[in-house]
Length: 247
Ligand code: NAP
Image 1 (spheres, protein in one colour):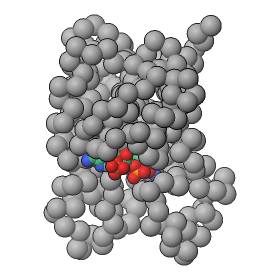
Image 2 (image 1 turned 135 degrees about the horizontal axis):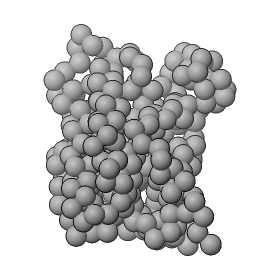
Image 3 (image 1 turned 30 degrees about the horizontal axis):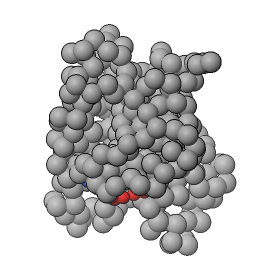
Image 4 (image 1 turned 60 degrees about the vertical axis):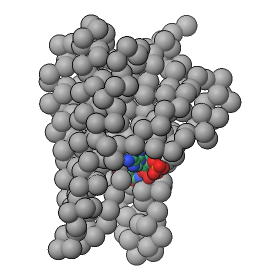
């Protein structure tokens, strides 16, 4: 029987679903019954195999957000009700030498592409009178400054802002717009930090939970925020961080 956490009958698109947090989110949504399109600039074979092996439904979509408007046509006439904007990149460099090319690359993928993907999704749902949910992947650097990642920090502060703006505009249409701010999660994105013994030790010492997060920690929260149980939650930026921000 479908309960308040069920995603049965829903169709989801998850960006950057071939690895890390996006993969865990795709698997978690499919686990609750959603049919999941795994979108990435590389094929999402592993994620699709994991979902199908568990009896779920998944398909593949190749998309590269180096063009921030790459998703402009993918929702027209399709029956998506859930959108998870997870794809993201990071470039580490001192602020004094952070290049314009790095700034543009990061802000294009992490912020501009997210807004225009939301716009394409929202246009379709609002035009068709359908309800749905958007989940954007923010960061602790939506709240904090960070260090040596100026483009990334700007992009993730921007994600918190557009999440709230879209929530305000689209609540009357029955579309919720939320974000998850992951703490320090063990993925490719944080490999450089984990390989630096000093930084890794400093980070672990500050996490009340005493461990790096796992992609599945974000997957479960994502499934909840996309579910009917969360239909009155909108405009939230929820930190899933082992207590980091509480400290
Ligand atoms: P990841 O393992 O590096 O995954 C990033 C995903 O984004 C990959 O699927 C990647 O595809 C995709 N992607 C990058 N550029 C793209 C483009 N131009 N077009 C389409 N897809 C693109 O890192 P992750 O940690 O799972 O990151 C996922 C999200 O969580 C990001 O938004 C990141 O900022 C956010 N986040 C992560 C952490 C953390 O601690 N890990 C903390 C806070 C926020 P490829 O595999 O082809 O590169």
